[in-house]
Image (cartoon, rainbow, N blue to C red; front, side, top):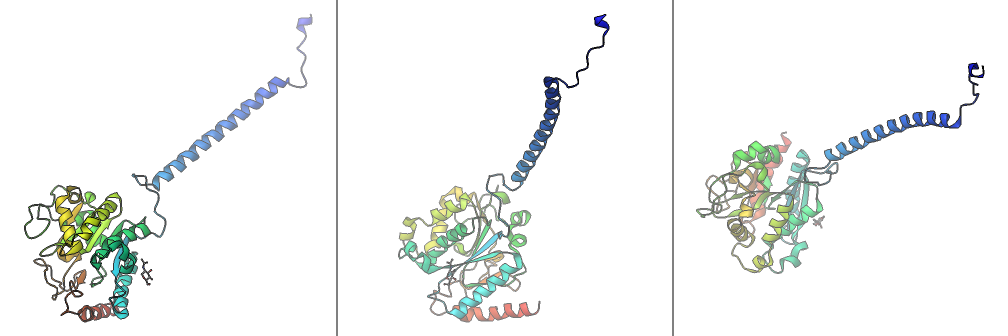
Length: 318
Ligand SMILES: *[C@@H]1O[C@H](CO)[C@@H](O)[C@H](O)[C@H]1NC(C)=O
């Protein structure tokens, strides 16, 4: 009979039963939290991947200009008025396209130059610009004795965009004119290129070139600025050294695009040594007054003036 009795109801569930119910609930909660945590981690991971490039370089801070225009000024050698004109011309151009200017001063590099010609300052100046703008991608060195005459052209559309650059690259031509046996590579694609430069009738032209930030750029600038070259009185200083290193070092040639002179380096009619079709024509991107500072019969300020006025009058008509 005793067995017929219904089991005594326990008013309070035994502690173990309660705790097991509790832990079941708890486990469900924990599982939810874990899933949520994992989801968040995944989102953070994906986001972090978005902001890191494939080479693992950190995200580019907002507001970083993609292009830095490097101009080397010799404040001891140029008048204030002349410097102001060059600066205004560059500032207008940078503002239009969201670029940044880096106005370097030759006097800052005197120790490094160690009595070598002052024109060498371009090399440490570009290096300096890169160190000051570590997140910018391209560095466009344009000699001070030049004006940007067609500021509507962005460097991207005019030179850098993949298909544009590939259409400009001169393949299998003598690297140093007129007939060096070393020729530009013909298999290169736009993505291989770190250095974009032109030649005139005789040499490579360091007065206007574009260099892409990165390990190659640093190696190239250090190599170019080797103390041995600095002290070796090449007749045309950094220009001849550039001629030399591009011919002797395939590692450099493999990163180099030679483009037609007038794309970034038109010479004024008073400048000698332009390549065939290298002399400035109306509508060209830039005009350079090559040699106006070294030829005692010439005057940079006088040569610049009519083109500067033309540039100003075009601005007024925009
Ligand atoms: C060059 O000198 C000018 C005027 O002294 C100065 O404003 C400018 O910051 C200097 N450039 C660099 C890169 O230090």
